[in-house]
Image (cartoon, rainbow, N blue to C red; front, side, top):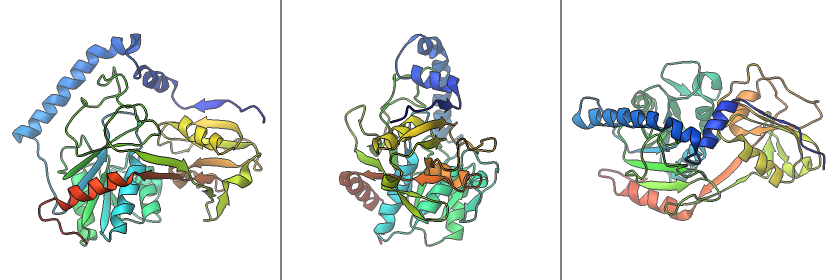
Length: 341
């Protein structure tokens, strides 16, 4: 097997900081006083909402927020898609709201089949593409929720992609997602990865990784699909790529996890490119020759196919355990005024 080429990273300083968040080392200790200021400001913000000085608005359907308490991504989007698919399989009309992080627009808009991911965000574009559920983006998620209900009045449940700390949107169920990092060193930003203290009240905890970092909560299985997807809709069995030196690219929170899963499938990665999360690929040029397969995540493909139509997206198959969905259904059914399909 040929030796693998260099891995290109988008932000070495960010990588060093995330590594520092895993333990209470010198850098984390140096930043710890700043974390006290962050915690104080976060507490003051929460007080404003409790006193009614800042407003929380609700919509007339149940809202499920899927978020996390750690920075750097924890696998929320696969959880959102799994929840949407589960609820739709039950016969419910489900919509999704999101801020649309990283987009170049600032308005409230619906994500359509023809939407440019740069205008709506790569994750909302992926969610709509993968689930076919209506998706709206807005800086204020309450605006997205209202617009969604106006455009799709039959909607029975709204799922918010992220927003655990977005207190302006009232919610009925909170799902907190953790990856294998757990809570890291347990400190608040910037000394640690926590946006808010943990533990905190939460309806459901889901571990999205393969090795939960702490006891409690529900687990999920995750693996790469057997087939890669071409831009024209064709399915390419991954086994047909075995033995061919490939180029792998990922602009996600933890790109090495994607590369490791490709290797576990028996693929040979001649080069790996880890770009900043939500990269728009504007200045990216395809390396290698056209004969080398170019592999990327499904999230990246919605933007990358504009520049590299030969790229192959390798979807992630993510499935929370049955007990998680049973608990979610029970909490949803217990809501006052909720009418199941």
